[in-house]
Length: 76
Ligand code: SF4
Image (cartoon, rainbow, N blue to C red):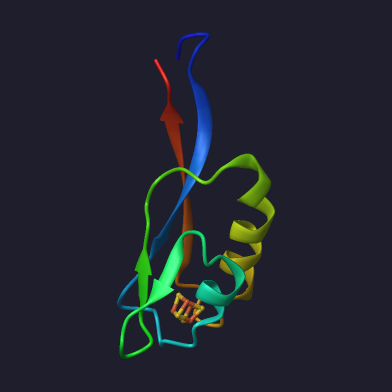
């Protein structure tokens, strides 16, 4: 990793585990919206620092533990 790179997180959802409770979209509408059946549509771009706490809450509050946070290296 170079000096210009940093570690960020992005949100993923396990579609098998998800049961369409919708809490993730309520907590993190900047990255998660719901389709017509209530299943999440996730924007997988890195989460800005000011939203990391909400992303973490979306992961911990998901009743199905279907919200996954991935570490990614961004920048070059
Ligand atoms: S909170 Fe969990 S179970 Fe509910 S829609 Fe989001 S990922 Fe699916």
